[in-house]
Length: 237
Image 1 (cartoon, helix red, strand yellow):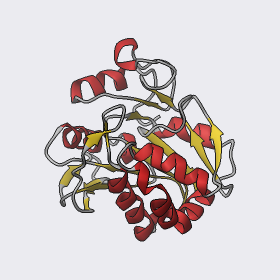
Image 2: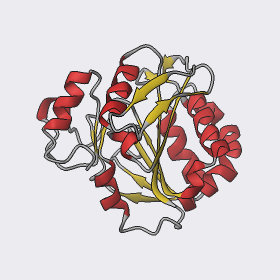
Image 3: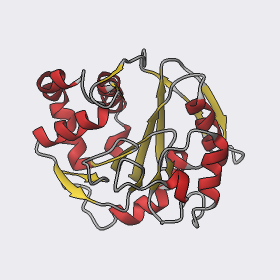
């Protein structure tokens, strides 16, 4: 069994696709995990790494269109990510891995650093890692195999119970509230994520040298690679 199963959800034809093509070519971010999946609204060939060991094609999970709204004018994307998580459960790859990770395409993510963080936990435990003082934030979502089994059993109940929030909040609030409803235990780890919504950090302005697991948001290939190259770690580390 592997340690990390990682996935991203990608909008076709925009900056997310450009970022993922670069990540595949360099063998970084989710493509440095033991297994990976990219989901989108179409099947897109994202290319291969020079080693030839990695070749990525997206899985088509249907439309990714969503409205923006709520008090913070957020992407109201809970329903899209319910489909994404259901796809993860149907594929079943997660069952062969200790941890499942959702990483946004514009998050500079170091799987090797995450491995060092999760090694202190028992993956069979019923837990998820909370990355933000505001509660779980979406650029990086990390759930143990124990937590995933409970999430799989209860996602339909969550969708029914939390439907009223879909017009107010985004997918990370759905996940946070769902895991809470299902009794998946929250474990704080504030070395996971650097981003403006958490602890008022601003890696775009201040750089990516703090040694955290992920930095967000970097929406161009140039800014992403600058963060990566100045992070002080190996690209996969």
